[in-house]
Structure formats: structure tokens, C-alpha cells
Image (tube, rainbow, N blue to C red):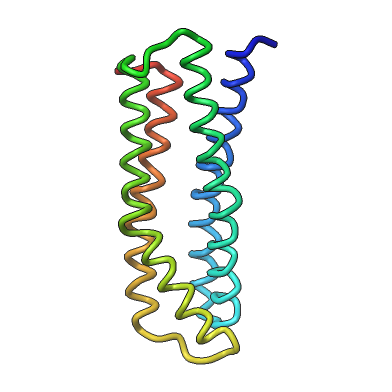
Length: 155
């Protein structure tokens, strides 16, 4: 296997980890929240944080290594329109994560620790959860669009 194929494989595995984790995490966190059970919600909130460290951050590292290696080994320019569009969509998702979702997620985790043993879930948790869900959906759709742009080489 040549170096381009190796880097492209690394990039695709990164996409699977990254997009797969953010999509599935949104689903099972929503399902946990629907139970309204403080213990289940606290457990799910903790898992959101852990899986983000392993799969979202891990996928991000693989995406960067695989993407940079692919265009280098494949003699592609980072200024190639579809690479620029795909990277831009991905970066927009990253800005939402760093500016909105991670701070909200940290506050949700802190609140969940407080009610993990079965205490009452405060209204603030539900307000933050709604914000996390809305911005999380946007931050999930952007990398999905980036996948479509990259695969279709659109731009």
C-alpha cells in the first residue's frame, strides 16, 4: 500500500471516529435525558465527556494527520477548492465545539455530579441541555456536509 492510501485510510478512520461519536453521543444523551432519572443522566453525561476525549479528540487527531498526509502524499494543494470547503466546514464545527459546546458540556457535567446520587435536577441543567442539543445538531451537520464535499470533491 502506498503512502497516499495509508494516509487516506487514517483520514477515513478519523472521520468514522469523529462523526460517529458526535452523532451517537447526541442520540444516547437525549435518550438518557428523556428518562428524567438523575442517576442515568449523570452517568450519560460522564460518558459524553469520556467518549469525547477518546473518540472525538482521537478522531480529530487522525483527521488532521490523515488529511495533511493525504494531500501531501497525493500531491494535492490545501488550496484545492473541495479541500478548502471541507476543511472550512469542519473548522466551523470546531469553533462551535470550542466556543459553545465544550463550555456548556463542562457545566452540564458539573451539575450532573451534584445530582448523581439521586438529587433533584435543576432547571439550569435543562436550559443548558437544550442549548447543547441545538448547537450540537449544527456542529454535527457541518462535518457531515464536509464529508459530502470531500467525497464528491465539490467546490
